[in-house]
Image 1: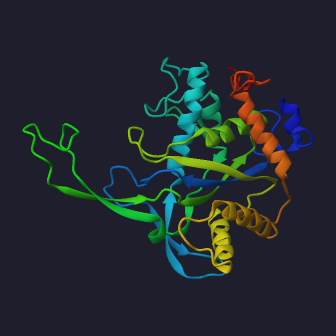
Image 2: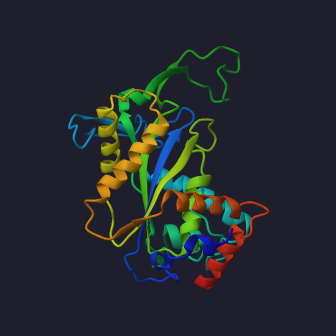
Image 3: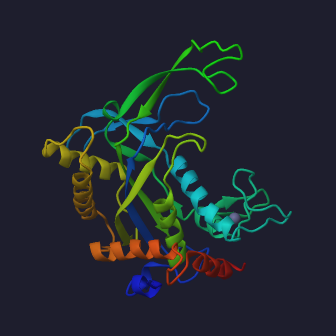
Length: 324
Ligand SMILES: [Zn+2]
Protein backbone atom coordinates (compact mmCIF):
# COMPACT_ATOMS: atom_id res chain seq x y z
CA UNK A 1 0.00 0.00 0.00
CA UNK A 2 1.29 3.44 -0.87
CA UNK A 3 0.63 6.89 0.44
CA UNK A 4 -0.89 7.93 -2.91
CA UNK A 5 -3.70 5.46 -2.22
CA UNK A 6 -4.54 7.35 0.96
CA UNK A 7 -3.92 10.95 0.10
CA UNK A 8 -5.38 11.08 -3.40
CA UNK A 9 -7.98 13.83 -3.70
CA UNK A 10 -7.29 14.94 -0.13
CA UNK A 11 -3.96 16.69 -0.66
CA UNK A 12 -5.46 20.06 0.27
CA UNK A 13 -6.15 18.94 3.82
CA UNK A 14 -2.46 18.51 4.55
CA UNK A 15 0.41 20.95 4.51
CA UNK A 16 2.70 20.31 1.61
CA UNK A 17 5.67 21.30 3.77
CA UNK A 18 6.17 22.19 7.38
CA UNK A 19 5.86 25.94 7.95
CA UNK A 20 5.57 28.35 10.87
CA UNK A 21 2.58 30.06 9.31
CA UNK A 22 -0.83 28.68 10.23
CA UNK A 23 -3.22 27.95 7.39
CA UNK A 24 -6.15 26.70 9.45
CA UNK A 25 -6.12 23.11 8.19
CA UNK A 26 -7.66 21.03 10.92
CA UNK A 27 -7.86 17.26 11.15
CA UNK A 28 -9.94 15.89 14.01
CA UNK A 29 -9.94 12.28 15.08
CA UNK A 30 -12.56 10.76 17.38
CA UNK A 31 -11.07 8.05 19.57
CA UNK A 32 -12.79 5.49 21.72
CA UNK A 33 -10.53 4.44 24.59
CA UNK A 34 -11.47 1.27 26.40
CA UNK A 35 -9.81 0.14 29.64
CA UNK A 36 -8.56 -3.44 29.30
CA UNK A 37 -7.41 -3.74 32.89
CA UNK A 38 -7.75 -1.79 36.11
CA UNK A 39 -6.50 1.74 35.58
CA UNK A 40 -5.48 4.51 37.93
CA UNK A 41 -5.37 8.02 36.49
CA UNK A 42 -4.46 10.69 38.97
CA UNK A 43 -2.09 13.56 39.31
CA UNK A 44 1.08 11.74 40.21
CA UNK A 45 2.50 12.37 43.65
CA UNK A 46 -0.50 14.47 44.67
CA UNK A 47 -1.91 11.87 47.03
CA UNK A 48 -5.30 12.65 45.53
CA UNK A 49 -7.88 10.22 44.22
CA UNK A 50 -8.66 9.57 40.57
CA UNK A 51 -9.08 12.49 38.20
CA UNK A 52 -12.72 13.41 37.84
CA UNK A 53 -14.87 16.34 36.80
CA UNK A 54 -18.45 17.29 37.58
CA UNK A 55 -20.41 17.94 34.40
CA UNK A 56 -23.85 17.50 32.83
CA UNK A 57 -24.22 13.87 31.88
CA UNK A 58 -25.97 14.65 28.62
CA UNK A 59 -26.86 17.59 26.42
CA UNK A 60 -30.56 16.79 26.79
CA UNK A 61 -30.10 15.07 30.11
CA UNK A 62 -29.04 17.91 32.40
CA UNK A 63 -28.33 15.83 35.52
CA UNK A 64 -24.94 16.79 36.96
CA UNK A 65 -22.54 14.10 38.06
CA UNK A 66 -18.84 13.26 38.09
CA UNK A 67 -17.09 11.60 35.18
CA UNK A 68 -13.72 9.85 35.31
CA UNK A 69 -11.06 11.56 33.24
CA UNK A 70 -7.86 10.68 31.45
CA UNK A 71 -6.07 14.01 31.41
CA UNK A 72 -4.79 15.39 28.14
CA UNK A 73 -1.35 15.57 29.75
CA UNK A 74 -1.37 11.85 30.48
CA UNK A 75 -2.50 10.88 26.98
CA UNK A 76 0.02 13.16 25.35
CA UNK A 77 2.90 11.96 27.56
CA UNK A 78 2.20 8.30 26.88
CA UNK A 79 1.70 8.71 23.15
CA UNK A 80 4.76 10.88 22.68
CA UNK A 81 6.80 8.24 24.52
CA UNK A 82 5.54 5.62 22.08
CA UNK A 83 6.51 7.76 19.11
CA UNK A 84 9.89 8.70 20.51
CA UNK A 85 10.78 5.06 21.18
CA UNK A 86 10.37 4.37 17.49
CA UNK A 87 12.32 7.50 16.49
CA UNK A 88 15.14 6.57 18.90
CA UNK A 89 15.30 3.05 17.52
CA UNK A 90 15.66 4.48 14.03
CA UNK A 91 18.17 7.22 14.92
CA UNK A 92 15.68 9.95 14.25
CA UNK A 93 16.07 11.85 17.50
CA UNK A 94 18.74 14.53 17.19
CA UNK A 95 21.14 16.31 19.51
CA UNK A 96 20.97 19.78 21.00
CA UNK A 97 23.66 22.45 20.66
CA UNK A 98 25.47 21.09 23.72
CA UNK A 99 25.39 17.58 22.25
CA UNK A 100 22.75 16.01 24.48
CA UNK A 101 20.30 13.70 22.79
CA UNK A 102 16.71 14.93 22.44
CA UNK A 103 14.90 13.98 25.65
CA UNK A 104 11.73 15.21 27.29
CA UNK A 105 12.38 14.04 30.84
CA UNK A 106 15.77 15.79 30.90
CA UNK A 107 14.31 18.89 29.33
CA UNK A 108 16.69 18.74 26.39
CA UNK A 109 14.43 18.84 23.33
CA UNK A 110 16.38 18.93 20.07
CA UNK A 111 13.74 21.02 18.33
CA UNK A 112 14.50 19.26 15.06
CA UNK A 113 12.95 15.80 15.27
CA UNK A 114 9.50 14.74 14.13
CA UNK A 115 8.25 14.59 17.70
CA UNK A 116 9.51 18.04 18.73
CA UNK A 117 8.05 19.53 15.57
CA UNK A 118 4.66 17.82 15.84
CA UNK A 119 4.06 17.80 19.59
CA UNK A 120 5.90 20.99 20.37
CA UNK A 121 8.84 21.97 22.55
CA UNK A 122 10.30 24.97 24.33
CA UNK A 123 13.90 25.64 25.26
CA UNK A 124 15.53 28.28 27.42
CA UNK A 125 17.20 30.19 24.59
CA UNK A 126 13.85 31.01 23.03
CA UNK A 127 13.44 28.18 20.53
CA UNK A 128 9.87 26.91 20.59
CA UNK A 129 7.19 25.20 18.58
CA UNK A 130 3.57 25.09 19.63
CA UNK A 131 2.07 21.64 19.61
CA UNK A 132 0.18 20.92 16.42
CA UNK A 133 -1.48 17.93 17.99
CA UNK A 134 -4.07 19.27 20.40
CA UNK A 135 -5.35 16.93 23.09
CA UNK A 136 -8.44 17.23 25.26
CA UNK A 137 -9.36 15.43 28.48
CA UNK A 138 -11.06 12.11 27.75
CA UNK A 139 -14.33 11.55 29.63
CA UNK A 140 -15.87 8.31 30.77
CA UNK A 141 -19.27 7.98 29.13
CA UNK A 142 -20.81 6.63 32.33
CA UNK A 143 -20.72 8.50 35.65
CA UNK A 144 -17.72 8.08 37.96
CA UNK A 145 -19.53 5.86 40.47
CA UNK A 146 -20.47 3.34 37.80
CA UNK A 147 -16.96 2.89 36.43
CA UNK A 148 -14.81 2.90 39.56
CA UNK A 149 -14.17 0.62 42.51
CA UNK A 150 -12.15 0.82 45.70
CA UNK A 151 -9.59 -1.73 46.66
CA UNK A 152 -7.92 -2.18 50.00
CA UNK A 153 -4.46 -3.63 50.13
CA UNK A 154 -1.69 -4.14 52.63
CA UNK A 155 0.93 -1.46 52.26
CA UNK A 156 4.31 -2.65 51.01
CA UNK A 157 7.47 -2.35 53.05
CA UNK A 158 10.53 -0.57 51.71
CA UNK A 159 11.87 -3.86 50.38
CA UNK A 160 8.86 -4.01 48.06
CA UNK A 161 7.23 -6.99 49.73
CA UNK A 162 4.39 -7.48 52.16
CA UNK A 163 6.81 -8.64 54.87
CA UNK A 164 9.48 -6.76 56.78
CA UNK A 165 13.04 -8.06 57.25
CA UNK A 166 11.89 -10.17 60.21
CA UNK A 167 9.17 -11.78 58.15
CA UNK A 168 6.26 -10.02 59.85
CA UNK A 169 3.26 -9.37 57.60
CA UNK A 170 2.30 -5.79 56.89
CA UNK A 171 -0.65 -4.63 58.88
CA UNK A 172 -1.20 -1.17 57.51
CA UNK A 173 -4.04 -1.03 55.04
CA UNK A 174 -4.24 1.40 52.15
CA UNK A 175 -7.15 2.13 49.87
CA UNK A 176 -6.99 2.81 46.18
CA UNK A 177 -9.71 3.92 43.82
CA UNK A 178 -9.41 2.38 40.38
CA UNK A 179 -11.18 2.44 37.04
CA UNK A 180 -12.78 -0.86 36.17
CA UNK A 181 -11.78 -2.81 33.08
CA UNK A 182 -14.38 -2.26 30.38
CA UNK A 183 -14.75 1.45 31.09
CA UNK A 184 -15.21 3.40 27.87
CA UNK A 185 -13.88 6.93 27.35
CA UNK A 186 -14.71 9.29 24.47
CA UNK A 187 -11.94 11.40 23.12
CA UNK A 188 -11.00 13.76 20.33
CA UNK A 189 -7.59 14.90 19.14
CA UNK A 190 -7.10 17.79 16.73
CA UNK A 191 -4.15 18.12 14.35
CA UNK A 192 -3.47 21.59 13.05
CA UNK A 193 -1.55 22.36 9.87
CA UNK A 194 0.30 19.05 9.66
CA UNK A 195 1.87 17.29 6.71
CA UNK A 196 0.67 13.82 5.76
CA UNK A 197 3.70 12.24 7.43
CA UNK A 198 3.24 14.25 10.64
CA UNK A 199 -0.37 13.08 10.67
CA UNK A 200 0.67 9.44 10.21
CA UNK A 201 3.20 9.84 13.02
CA UNK A 202 0.66 11.28 15.48
CA UNK A 203 -2.10 8.87 14.57
CA UNK A 204 0.13 5.82 14.76
CA UNK A 205 1.25 6.85 18.26
CA UNK A 206 -2.38 6.71 19.37
CA UNK A 207 -2.85 3.31 17.75
CA UNK A 208 0.40 1.85 19.09
CA UNK A 209 0.02 3.01 22.70
CA UNK A 210 -1.41 0.30 24.94
CA UNK A 211 -0.47 1.21 28.47
CA UNK A 212 -1.44 4.37 30.29
CA UNK A 213 -0.48 3.49 33.86
CA UNK A 214 2.87 4.05 35.50
CA UNK A 215 5.58 2.36 33.44
CA UNK A 216 6.49 -0.08 36.18
CA UNK A 217 2.93 -1.18 36.97
CA UNK A 218 0.93 -3.98 35.48
CA UNK A 219 -2.20 -1.88 35.31
CA UNK A 220 -3.41 0.71 32.85
CA UNK A 221 -3.96 -1.41 29.73
CA UNK A 222 -5.98 0.51 27.20
CA UNK A 223 -7.24 -0.10 23.70
CA UNK A 224 -7.76 2.81 21.30
CA UNK A 225 -10.12 2.72 18.32
CA UNK A 226 -10.33 5.49 15.73
CA UNK A 227 -13.99 6.16 14.93
CA UNK A 228 -13.75 9.22 12.73
CA UNK A 229 -11.28 11.31 10.80
CA UNK A 230 -12.63 14.71 9.75
CA UNK A 231 -11.01 17.58 7.84
CA UNK A 232 -12.16 21.15 8.46
CA UNK A 233 -11.20 24.81 8.21
CA UNK A 234 -12.02 25.50 11.86
CA UNK A 235 -12.16 23.61 15.14
CA UNK A 236 -15.15 21.35 15.66
CA UNK A 237 -17.29 20.79 18.78
CA UNK A 238 -15.80 19.74 22.12
CA UNK A 239 -15.06 16.29 23.33
CA UNK A 240 -17.42 16.81 26.26
CA UNK A 241 -20.29 17.56 23.86
CA UNK A 242 -19.56 14.38 21.96
CA UNK A 243 -19.51 12.39 25.21
CA UNK A 244 -22.80 13.96 26.34
CA UNK A 245 -24.47 13.29 23.04
CA UNK A 246 -23.48 9.61 23.22
CA UNK A 247 -24.83 9.46 26.77
CA UNK A 248 -28.19 10.89 25.63
CA UNK A 249 -28.50 8.22 22.97
CA UNK A 250 -27.71 5.46 25.47
CA UNK A 251 -30.26 6.92 27.89
CA UNK A 252 -33.01 7.02 25.25
CA UNK A 253 -32.30 3.38 24.41
CA UNK A 254 -32.24 2.46 28.15
CA UNK A 255 -28.69 1.17 27.73
CA UNK A 256 -27.03 2.96 30.64
CA UNK A 257 -25.37 0.04 32.36
CA UNK A 258 -21.86 -1.14 33.15
CA UNK A 259 -20.14 -2.42 31.12
CA UNK A 260 -21.45 -0.66 28.03
CA UNK A 261 -21.95 -2.56 24.81
CA UNK A 262 -18.94 -1.25 22.87
CA UNK A 263 -20.42 -1.85 19.43
CA UNK A 264 -23.45 0.24 20.42
CA UNK A 265 -21.22 3.01 21.75
CA UNK A 266 -19.30 3.11 18.48
CA UNK A 267 -22.51 3.37 16.50
CA UNK A 268 -23.89 6.15 18.73
CA UNK A 269 -20.59 8.01 18.72
CA UNK A 270 -20.59 8.08 14.91
CA UNK A 271 -24.19 9.32 14.89
CA UNK A 272 -23.39 11.94 17.50
CA UNK A 273 -20.43 13.12 15.46
CA UNK A 274 -22.76 13.58 12.46
CA UNK A 275 -25.34 15.42 14.60
CA UNK A 276 -22.83 17.81 16.13
CA UNK A 277 -21.15 18.42 12.80
CA UNK A 278 -24.32 20.15 11.61
CA UNK A 279 -23.74 22.92 14.16
CA UNK A 280 -20.21 23.75 12.95
CA UNK A 281 -19.70 27.08 11.15
CA UNK A 282 -17.21 25.78 8.68
CA UNK A 283 -16.54 23.29 5.97
CA UNK A 284 -16.21 19.72 7.28
CA UNK A 285 -15.47 16.63 5.22
CA UNK A 286 -14.86 13.14 6.54
CA UNK A 287 -13.23 9.91 5.56
CA UNK A 288 -15.95 7.37 4.84
CA UNK A 289 -15.77 3.91 6.42
CA UNK A 290 -13.80 2.41 3.53
CA UNK A 291 -11.32 5.28 3.41
CA UNK A 292 -10.85 5.11 7.17
CA UNK A 293 -10.15 1.39 7.19
CA UNK A 294 -7.77 1.84 4.24
CA UNK A 295 -5.89 4.50 6.23
CA UNK A 296 -5.65 2.21 9.26
CA UNK A 297 -4.45 -0.68 7.08
CA UNK A 298 -1.84 1.61 5.59
CA UNK A 299 -0.56 2.56 9.04
CA UNK A 300 -0.41 -1.10 10.00
CA UNK A 301 1.54 -1.90 6.84
CA UNK A 302 4.21 0.81 7.32
CA UNK A 303 5.18 -0.78 10.64
CA UNK A 304 5.50 -4.24 9.14
CA UNK A 305 8.62 -5.79 7.62
CA UNK A 306 6.98 -6.46 4.27
CA UNK A 307 5.16 -3.14 4.01
CA UNK A 308 5.60 -1.38 0.69
CA UNK A 309 6.40 1.87 2.50
CA UNK A 310 8.18 1.96 5.85
CA UNK A 311 7.45 4.27 8.77
CA UNK A 312 11.16 4.80 9.34
CA UNK A 313 11.63 5.98 5.73
CA UNK A 314 8.64 8.30 5.89
CA UNK A 315 9.87 9.81 9.14
CA UNK A 316 13.38 10.21 7.75
CA UNK A 317 11.96 11.99 4.73
CA UNK A 318 10.06 14.38 7.02
CA UNK A 319 13.17 15.06 9.13
CA UNK A 320 15.09 15.91 5.98
CA UNK A 321 12.40 18.39 5.09
CA UNK A 322 12.92 20.10 8.46
CA UNK A 323 16.58 20.39 7.49
CA UNK A 324 18.04 17.41 9.33
ZN1 LIG B 1 13.47 16.37 19.33
